[in-house]
Image (cartoon, rainbow, N blue to C red):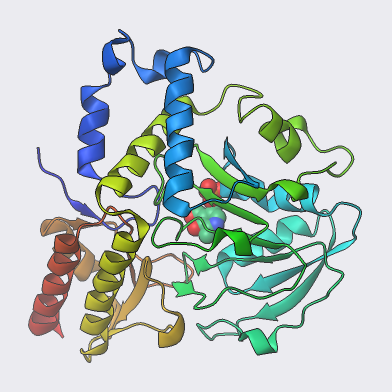
Length: 359
Ligand SMILES: Cc1ncc(COP(=O)(O)O)c(C=O)c1O
């Protein structure tokens, strides 16, 4: 078996230890005689897997008791609609921060349901976030939505927006579990699983109980936080295998010291890569150093004509999926929790070698 260092933005690398455990349990989960994939979601085996996963996640993120944790389907993209459908609650408008590609998608979807006011934005062509003092917040907004980490641009908020009594909704898809989160500052936190949580197909939602109320008229049952919370995410058949695998990831995180330990390693990994970029005359990262993502690191080569050779050389060295998003170009290294430090070191070594040979 030969495993590569996979820098994909998502679906992304998962801890090898977890994949091996899932393999070992694949045909016979703990003496049940069947795979988790084959279990009834209402049977006692799966119910115990589901409850353990939720308990472990609550412990890792220190989720207060007045929050529901939902294990849903539909990806983070479904939340772009579910947030307005559930949180408008009779109001007509919501505030949004626009800091990149995923904010824009969330905004476009929300416009189908309400007036969207842009309360702050990254200036055109600038890879940064607006300062708290520059936000133009509406105290009557139903909620404020933002994207703590823009996966494509590699921009991360260095602060949690303060919006008084207006609930804060956040798309944590590409940064959840990378460090502790102050959950009580948020009304809703959501994330697609396929980066730091587990396989694609599972969507995590953490929502404050008092925000669960009658949704917009016509909201499908599957999009109704209340119905999903009431049914403990089992209103219909949930994504059982994804839920199970997420549970294994949560246990792996706990074994490895939890989110504070993750934060230390992630900061170190990011610093290694940004230092390599900043200390060269060949690589460049466009993001304001104050809001550089720990998870997604875009960078360009001094000469874009060398991109293909860089990617081919990297692949030969076992470093894959480094091509940048088409809207940004160049390269992007996603260094989620499961990317080992050695993987980042191998990338940095390859970059130095490539610069020496071709720069
Ligand atoms: C920040 C962010 N939001 C939303 C999405 C969309 O997620 P999904 O594909 O789960 O709908 C992504 C996917 O990469 C993302 O990075």
